[in-house]
Image (cartoon, rainbow, N blue to C red; front, top):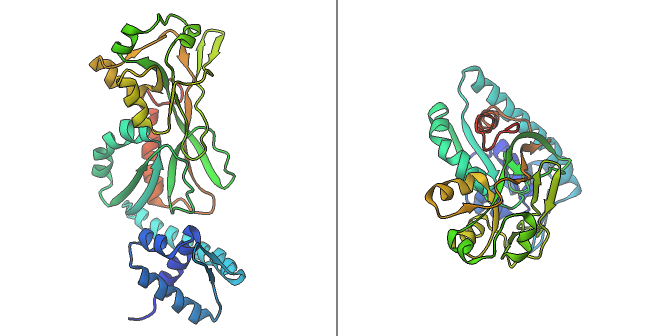
Length: 306
């Protein structure tokens, strides 16, 4: 089989970005032996060693780092050229890898995907839903919907929505708990906390009513770092939880959760669309990004100005 220089360049760039032959092969959906062969062919063609290999990690040599920067730019330009041609035919196509918080995915994006696939049948989505902050470059992610402040200088950031929260508990819990009529009463409650996986940072809700505000900083009875487990704890009657309103809504309707302190508004979390500065925003990624932003803008539970 003839040596494909472009495919070898893609393989090399992905190895550098994820630091592993195995992960690069998985990201490109090829065999590890194929990746190794492409890298060997590229090193032979160039006459230089591109990678340092250890048992734990693969990293570029000095020549490899310089080659990566130029190769990445060439591949990005090529992808943009192909995307612009497809766009000129009014057809966006290809695979888009996107990450988002679980509530955004489960309550907003995924239920609306039939409309997206009808409009853009030639775009294939790889969607990851979790509460962790992923490294877009290292994991080969095209774009992400990210909750909270975005401080990474390597990311282009566009705020597109807001995740609204509320305090709630199960009817069984409230039946047996002390009265909960104002925020000070929370000290007499079983309050359940949430910590973000990876950073371990605690979510600190702030309640507001008019000019008054109250930070919920008491030590939680239990802590959780998974959104589904957290709301399950509330449903099980373990205590008071602060969860996304979009996630709690169906449980309010079913009567399995009850909103508490409804006259106090809880602080929201900004939702931003982010992608790496180092990459051009291809037509297929732009199509998904614009669709997701419009979806949030048209939903009162998620839009910025509601």
